[in-house]
Image (tube, rainbow, N blue to C red; front, side, top):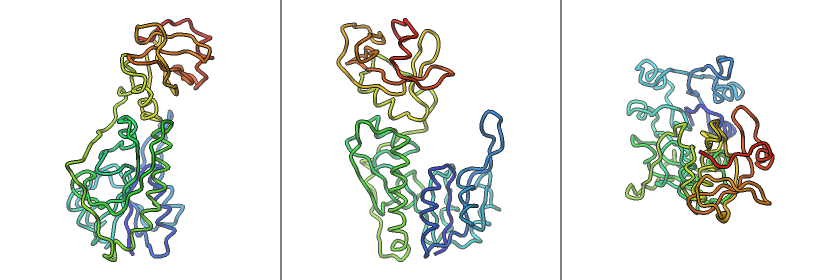
Length: 307
């Protein structure tokens, strides 16, 4: 089976390795984003999928600036793939690219589609307080994350789950599901199930400022933010004119103080008054510093409330 693989970040190396281990799969090319400057030194750095593809000995690695280039589209078409697999590639595929593989493209999306379509589905599920989370292997179409589903996995969404760790775990599960269905899908014995668009929900691209805490929100809402925006963009608050990242906390009863943002010292540690309930801070990170126990941070400040 001739496969082209489109992906870029570290997460996308998980299904790539799973497919490469299948004797029936011939990954004829990997398509990934160009090398980009990275880090403080702005050193030109290859995307993780490129590094992985070289390690796996995949013969062709393409890094076009865009798939809107007709010459690039012709180059991909010349590969004559049976099927494509897309995992966090970084560009929406147009119809002429979608039409290249004879069996279309498959995609791993870490949500229980049609819920949480878009680029940050696990974040969306945590923010919504869902009781379940999951991963879907789906057929890619022209509408974002709206294609028919081949297989789904679902599991409880735990009150301690964080977006980064959970997304990686779901990609490992999704990679396994992909290897289980790709052969029967191409053979025509597995028929995808259409999604119900009426049940769809969406999340857009995250911006840096979505994690700024409004202490008039409930403690439950703020706790979800902390877990949903980990590792990026993080959840933070203004502390005497500087930025303090709130890394972890526990929802608790509201202290006697009534003004949201007030910090109350307790035997367990500093508790912040919220619009409803309180948040016991357990780990914080001062601007320019390292993550630390919230009790240690509190011993170094007499701050009365967050701004």
